[in-house]
Length: 196
Image (cartoon, rainbow, N blue to C red; front, side):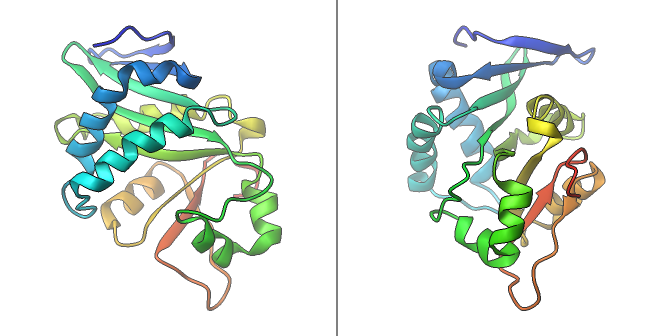
């Protein structure tokens, strides 16, 4: 495993350590993150193919340059068990990827109020063998610890019912879609988000 310039915050008694890595330093671990991503997202309900997994690697290189980019890494003696990535959502809300669905559901006023300038959690991935031990919760807690004014958000697919249930169980709050605008994604606000 590559050397991580990090800030350990939560040494875990279960032989797992969560560290935060800021900016492009995480690119030293790109191969390991791609391996975790493939392990998590190649199966149901995501069923991502090799091309989509390669696209994640390319996105990571681009995303690491975003304002406020950080990665939370769950490490054990055997390597990286999971990770979360995030950055500060720009005031000019993006239109690529699933952003257009988010904008359609929330409308411009709620996007500005709830999401612009907040910490956006882009990916959360925990290897199947590391689930059920609080790894996802710990990653979310650490990556959102210094979110601007407690404002953090994420989105997930409506079809990922286990994932949706997990976010709800962890205290994340679903943002209701405007009537008639529901799409295939659900937007969640962090437990500390003042707009929840």
